[in-house]
Image 1 (cartoon, rainbow, N blue to C red):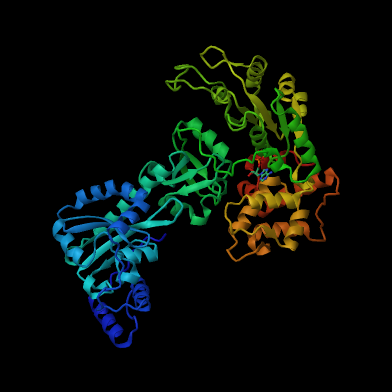
Image 2 (image 1 turned 180 degrees about the vertical axis):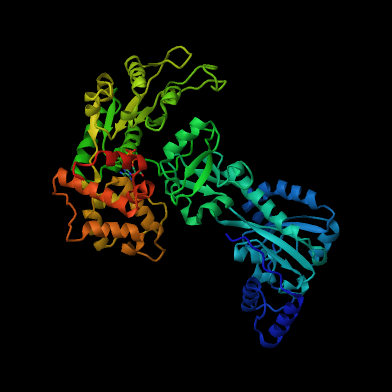
Length: 640
Ligand SMILES: Nc1ncnc2c1ncn2[C@@H]1O[C@H](COP(=O)(O)OP(=O)(O)OP(=O)(O)O)[C@@H](O)[C@H]1O
């Protein structure tokens, strides 16, 4: 949303413009905003000297209903309007609140000016949309979706020429317009500070609505300047537990360039370099101090996460269907076999170990297993063992008693294992669990008790799922992983196939597109693009595929009926074409593992080359994390 006032028109220019309008009917010689607005007034059939006999005005009951409809806005705005009024009392002003159609819902003002204002219907019930009352701050701010000042004869109708009005639109956290806040007075006493005042008050109202509407969501507070985090200028995003951006305040949309359509569809992962779960972990380590992060475009932000105390957090991804596992069974034989095996152990005390490349869907599978089993109504607690430093993972996992160590919270901490009591504990990246903690975890799994730091052991019951993309047997052979722990984790080992080996790519894409909350998103993919997608080797697996589809659908407009090449950003389209065009044909599903692996390595090297060695940019192109990229580089085939 733009934030500007019209450049005030000179009195002489306005007089000339009025004369020209009267003689030729044309709008000339005015600043752009006024030119647009006056032109709209002429098109709406208004003339400057005409009385407003057609202007809409709500009767008592209708006004009451309109106020009820906007109950959230009117009740939350009122304390701020009162505060604003206290600041400008006795200055001959009136403060007005309108709904998104320009109907005035509330007015607080000095009695002397309120009476004059009432004579031109500047009072609750009146509609101040431009089409009703010509150029005016309320109506023009609504149409321009920007703060404006309309001063004296800039008003299109002569009868409003004694007014000066400053107005700022009020937006909901999804970017939709809710209404307008306006300060009006006699134009001879207008002070330029009024414009800043109305914008600041509008921001206060928006922030208040944001905080109340997102009380259950994770909030990410940020700014480019460390000192600005925690102040009124900070950007705030409301985020779901899985990283979807649910809402943004105005500074956040301005700083990140977000649009209304992004709410509920864009992921925080599109904005930051790294994974949301890592950010959560880093934030926990810093204990509420802002963390410096790198954005995808290379710029830096200081962020502070605020995790809601009210539980449970609202689920934002579409809820799992009754048979969550069936939703993942999209036709690939290896997946179907894996799901069949999982079904046989559901509800039994058998730990499940998920193996698979990064992005193959281990996390999603763990959630589906929990949602399909008898513990579905209980907690699902995921711990990323790679994201926590050794000295913190102990307290994080096992908890601690009150006052167990310096800096500990006074009330102690339950620890993630006990938070999973009754439900499922998901240990992601278990291969990265520090050696010193492997034996403690082993004891928990053997005894089913947790000993918090400084406290007595407590019995705990949970289902266990763990996941890794490492070769744990090789880690055991090299002494990096305890074999006894491996056997405790590995009740049933499920290998999730990499995407390049799956035979259900089309069904999988259909499932991903079907989950897109935007109803207008095309659910079909044009044949030539589909062929390219089917032959691509997908080094980032489903994560890369889902990310590509998300980017493509956001580049669609409402008229598009299918996704096509032009919906892909140039660099992604070039990568796809390169890999799927002769003379260097891509590996196909019939190629053996070795050539697939080599092809994937080549894609990685190529991405690094394209990104001129910038590993963050290369990881982004591949749709994988930087850590994964480094891991893949370390494991490159000899000769690469
Ligand atoms: N069956 C599926 N349908 C739709 N999207 C999926 C599916 N499986 C995975 N995804 C998407 O792919 C992305 C990666 O999935 P997930 O986090 O489960 O992978 P992972 O194997 O745990 O990766 P890592 O090893 O890097 O943690 C997520 O954005 C997820 O939403």
